[in-house]
Amino acid sequence: MVDRSSGVAVHRQIATALRDKISAGEFAPGEKLPSETQLIETYGVSRETVRKAVQLLESDGVVNVLQEKGVFVRPPAAITRLARSRLSRAARAKNEGAFLADAKAQGFTPSTSVRVRFEPADERTAELLAIEPGAEVTVRDRVMRANGLVVQLAVSRLPREFTRGTAIEEVNTGPGGAYARLEEAGHEIGRYVEDTGARMPTDEERTQLQLPPGTPVLTVTRIAYREDGTPLEMNDMTLPADRYRLTYEWAAD
Amino acid sequence: MVDRSSGVAVHRQIATALRDKISAGEFAPGEKLPSETQLIETYGVSRETVRKAVQLLESDGVVNVLQEKGVFVRPPAAITRLARSRLSRAARAKNEGAFLADAKAQGFTPSTSVRVRFEPADERTAELLAIEPGAEVTVRDRVMRANGLVVQLAVSRLPREFTRGTAIEEVNTGPGGAYARLEEAGHEIGRYVEDTGARMPTDEERTQLQLPPGTPVLTVTRIAYREDGTPLEMNDMTLPADRYRLTYEWAAD
DNA sequence: TAGTGGTCTAGACCACTTA
DNA sequence: AAGTGGTCTAGACCACTAC
Image 1 (cartoon, rainbow over the protein chains, first blue to last red):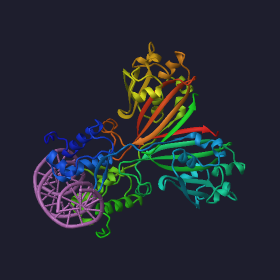
Image 2: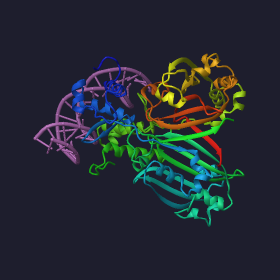
Image 3: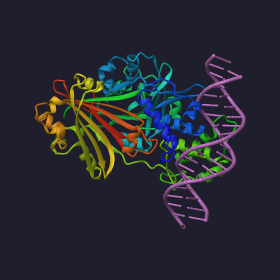
């Protein structure tokens, strides 16, 4: 089973063999792989070598390792699609934030915790919001949950001058959310820009989002601009990549 | 330095300590971390324990481990932004594919290899292209390089009926690319839909894209629709997440 | 030659689950 | 009690780099 003269590390050979069996369907999603003891016998290697092989699979998100249970082929997670239409005024008129509407559509019981604070703008914030570094910024720190589990983190920042005296500085922004309050205050939103990427989570994100090893996060930075081009809000979102996809749609040209 | 009664594994404590020092700037990007031997002395643990700590950092994409050299703080990669405007007819008129234009703008020497083949549609392809499973599909498999390095993979599929007799079935599609040929054949593109997510790469992708451990890939599936809503093309793209971000922009409402 | 990381082994103790 | 994965150690040999 193992070629010790191939130059390829034995634990990598074992990992590849298991990977192949998984993608060939020999081990179905949710199914248990052989235990460490069994793999030791099958491949004739030491325990640490087997463990290294399994760890490779784990850090690639192929399997879940459950203590005292075994190693299981990771079943695909339920995917939530976030479409840009979630930001339309029509959706806002329905009196629900984008997140609540999405979650309910998926049959989840959603909830959010919000913390509001005020900060001087750091360099990046100042640049994206086109304000002076150090200028006061209203920060809304949100944790979104579905059925009690944290599924999304969002940090929204607005120049304080646009939020003073509005419900944006309250925990509860009221119907239609912060964007509705901005428009009421005369700041009509002209366009949105979203910038998307992915990376491995920080330890903190891993804990908060309860991410299994080998799961990246999607990061989305949205900036809402007023009709005259002034940045009104920037929103840094962090989503588990195994549960979210982002959909964008536009007319040719 | 290490609390052996905290319940937290020693190698995790060491990983966290190193992580903290890195984010505190104590080790700058590109800088070398202490060698295994030094870490063994510093923390008073065995070699395997040190190695496990370093491996945690590596699989989170925090450090690069170079054999015979040492462990280095991973410097941020140069980011390429892909904007939806790359698909405009105006860009096409400039006689360059989206990739070539992007790469040149970044100062790279771009090149692509293309393989064209014909296949029966699998289930997913059939659904996305709204054709019968098994119907013939033209597949364009592209590998994009910048300065000789593979930086992007793309697999484009079109119902064969739309490509027969056009340069889309050739390796070189000619000026403006496949979309220009489609429009010449009377299939005017009406809108695009892109669906974005992220995951860890497969072994093959890791090899092709020369991805360091701990780097996810962005996956983008784009579907181009004709003005009447008929799907013309689907394009599965795979991008290294440390080098690409995707930008979308749209008017409110 | 010394220093670096890569691999592998053998054996130990632990905590928790399942039967 | 048996089985599972989690952690840690001590020591071995390797390949390559840098001096």
